[in-house]
Image 1 (tube, rainbow, N blue to C red):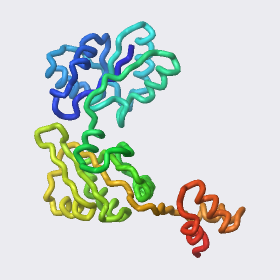
Image 2: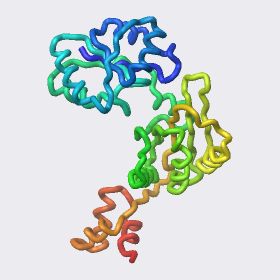
Image 3: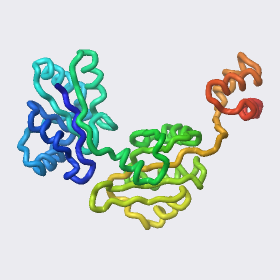
Image 4: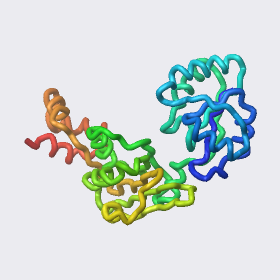
Length: 271
């Protein structure tokens, strides 16, 4: 059996009794950072050898784990914090288990995504998680274009070193009145949440009035407007207009995207 075990995102006392029992009964224990996992193991008084399982060795170690599972060994995967496979290694191993018809399960626990959603004070009924915010400019721009029309609450991870630049980018693309929350060090002693609209929060961060040290999760209010904006670059525009009239192109793009036909038509006929 393969176990994916959720671990505390900050406060080590959040480890579940079931997680402790499964770790204790495991034949092999794999972890992203053996040094950080040792802190947790010491906290629960368990002496267990940890093997490395991270993005750089995921393919080779996954093959080894599959062989161990085939030998009926109990294998457990733990992350540095939170649930393995969520912005951490694990997905490829899950796919291999499904192909090989090998059993796996999740031992649930704390989630920084859910914790940030609740702490933000923003709508919790529908949300989208985007993992770590991209580093490359063109990927950032593409994602921010999607944020313009995203109606669900938006959640992503960001580094303290890049959060100021990211807030600048967000301010350039989104309505400054949209609400945002910067959640840091959740469940830890220095847990804190900065809430306000994008303009207010950006100003506070720029004036160094909010300590940005530690792990950060950003939560942004979804778009409330019924109007769905769409960006059409010249390459896409020209491809459509080669085959169809502006009116027919607008109708087709509207059916695909849900944006208003009239707005698309205006963009298509603009020089």
